[in-house]
Length: 122
Image (tube, rainbow, N blue to C red):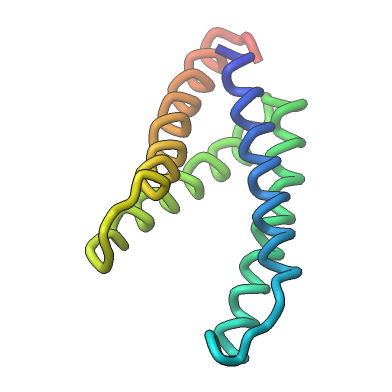
């Protein structure tokens, strides 16, 4: 169970670092978006990229329960919001994959982490 948790924490960390970097370094295109939307996107991308450090930290220090739970709840809420957004446009296989990777592993990891914590195995 702990190995599963660590693997997914590192995976989420890599995803956060890569997509955050892509968002912060994207080229501005005035024909596609306005300056305020671009600025907000870059700000959120930078926060997401910085979150990768927390994923990596908790992967090596799984006893950091509060930070672990915060990260799992944040990713889970992101998956719910992404699923709710499907009311605005059709689902694609990639969007379904993203939603699944945000909802299923996080719920399992919270459950596994609680079991390990209660058993004193963290």
